[in-house]
Amino acid sequence: MDVILSLIILIILILIGRHIWIVVQRRKNNVYMESMFEQQQAFLEQHPDAAKIYFFAKKKSQMLDVSKVNGAAPERFVEGRQQGIFLLPGKRYDLDLLCEERRRKERNVYTVAMQFSPAPRRTYTLKIDDTSKQLTIS
Figure 1 (cartoon, rainbow, N blue to C red):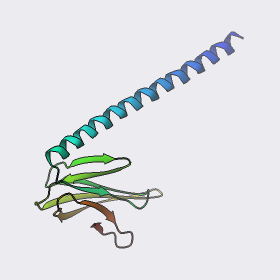
Figure 2 (figure 1 turned 180 degrees about the vertical axis):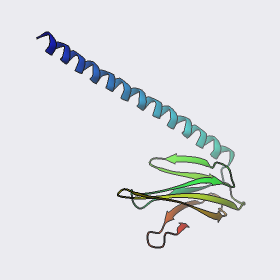
Figure 3 (figure 1 turned 60 degrees about the vertical axis):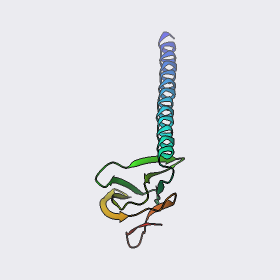
């Protein structure tokens, strides 16, 4: 009887510990998202005419990312479940794009270099064409 009671108490303690861990992880994520939102707002206050480029993958097996802009890390933003980068208008940018496709146990990763000049206060979408494997910004 004592063994069964000890096992029940152990299971309850494990469940409580797991719940506490989940709560702590969610709070960490909320703090990160709040600080990122504040950084985005500060950037937009300094540069109100900045253009936004969203990353759009049609399938869950695809991933697009801009790894570098003119050789440096880009200014990123997150809105809901979408992410992207800010670019200032009037400049020509060299974008280093990272593309990843996963199929079953196979993973293809490749990089693409692209030049782009954004217009003020415009929103763009970076997409990959499934048939030609070409990246487009529209």
